[in-house]
Image (cartoon, rainbow, N blue to C red):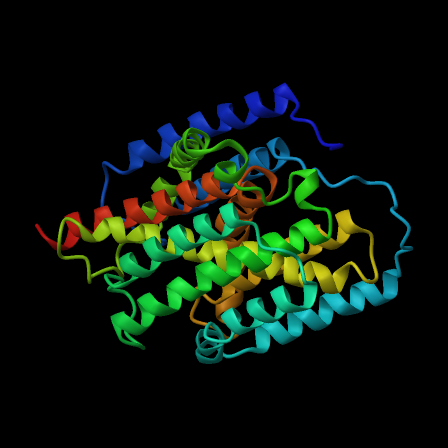
Length: 334
């Protein structure tokens, strides 16, 4: 593994993390929260600097040197452009419907790669899938399908997404380089809980900013004290299908005309911004929001997921949604 964690980068990140956390926490005492706040510009700049520090702290572990395939720059750029056009032209309703196809795509990948599924992986993926499916029954923000259908969908998205994504990473040698690893599979239960807790801690400035930008204002469905804990469902599910599955899938395409390190970086960025885009209103109007969400939220959790571990990313993701739901409960149940 080529990449090493440089101490000064870690210190730089935690300095930026501490400053951003204190700055945002101070503002939480001054509701209402809105993107139109007079603090929005300094908040975005602060979060951008903190994000850059995080990305610098988590280096890409894939070796830089060539492994035999010569890159074809023109084809590589063309594939990136085509991928962006195709993904961003998918209507938001079609993007939702495509979630039902992803488990089938994941199963097809498992069949085509013919890699044996490790029992420990299958059991862990099943456990996470069951947790996501059960908590998905309480996902009050979902109105386009029934809770039961949503919960079942989450089960299959997580189970097949994790198994197929891990298989691709292992098949291509990326998992051996430390990309997209699970701390549970490599270190057991204590390591997994430690990573999850680290994700909770790392997420603090992002959780605060999410509230300050008005993230809780639309979550009027939160009426009961237990509902914020449903945040574990997107925390698990979206890391499974939107990162562990989709990024390696796109990497399989890009690596045909590029070196692995460059191909994986491109796949990570394309999926990160597309994932941010499907969280907007869509159309051209959604592009500015996608740029902000993609840069300040999707990229950090993507780096954590692939360049640190899955459990840290789940902890980070859970915290960002959990705190948002907690503030929604407070705001709408006074």
